[in-house]
Image (cartoon, rainbow over all chains, first blue to last red):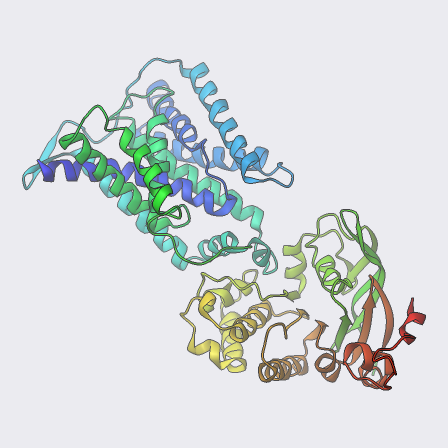
Length: 290
Length: 260
């Protein structure tokens, strides 16, 4: 049973890790936890649904379209709302992201209603394979693999591409980035696009196991945020590990202690981390800009 | 020899919200020279550099700035950098969590000539051999002097025509200061024009061609660096040399007053 809980915990953890990554990428650049992240992903998932069901496109086209929509949505929100904030502080930025959340939630409710829908997915959730003493569905495996691939791509992006390094540079010191000729506004757009796409991937992977309605990402967003806090809001690696850890801990808690209180674990972890290591488990010790 | 004008600042005025920081500053920089701006804390030295770089929103309030005959006031910092002005900010401002190599690479962000960039890496490693040894190290782990070298190196990666240096001697030991100024002079010999802002007047005047003294947002004195070094006021107020002892232990009458 332990192995089973552990492995399906990793599958859930993958989703949390993706959301945590999406949040951390934005947090590091715009210095705000984006509470609209979940709804951005939810809306993108709905776009995939609409392309798939209403317009009858193939999976490839629908999902690509959805990710493209996610990228544009991210760029749009940052450009139209966040960038307009004059001399922003964290609080006002946070309120803006909460505003996104409500606008997007309202938009989805208006367009698609509160019906619970089912997003078809090319990989089945019911066909399973036996791994040792544990049973995994194909979807679980796909989730784990896609997450790993995405993380690897991110790793390569931040390590080897000029834009990736410039993004890190902008996160560390925006003024210094500017005086090296880096267009920090463009970097911001790219950041939001990337983050939104990662969130959308999480949404699309989650929708087949959950039901697709405007509440799709409510719970996962909080879990993703908890993961990011657990790992450290300033480190991508930490956020990813935080996601996996939360997934596993939560599943083990659900299996051995109480299924009803499973969701509380995330909050418990936020509280514990904030009490004992507020910077997160994996945060580095550099002091950022003064 | 006829010198061509690289940068021409005409009567700029800069505000920090309500603080009137630059009160009509004009400055002409000729190609190939080193110009030094001296002045006390808060005189507005760094503000001149920041204004020219376009780092202050909606500033200069008045006046024009021309670089190689083109207006650059009101332009984005990123575009000004691309035109060939590099800026080494006060306090280095290296990217602490990037490696030395990545820092230098960022300096060449707006260039696309692979071979030229490779060439410049070579040049900068020749100039600052420490940096080559620490290529893979995070910049935040470097010492202050090494970070200063990195900041200068990073600025050079842009192949600037004009280089702004804001207090390169800040927080460095006298030996390091000497070394850095030696390198600055060497870079200038290779054809990079410089504008230097310094507290260390003696050092700055010893390598520069032209010196200006800024006080309360205005230039109060301008001259060849050689002449400024011999000037009584400059010696007294910026180099700490005292010419006459007074009975009270301090001077009651300040000759400097006539400057205002």
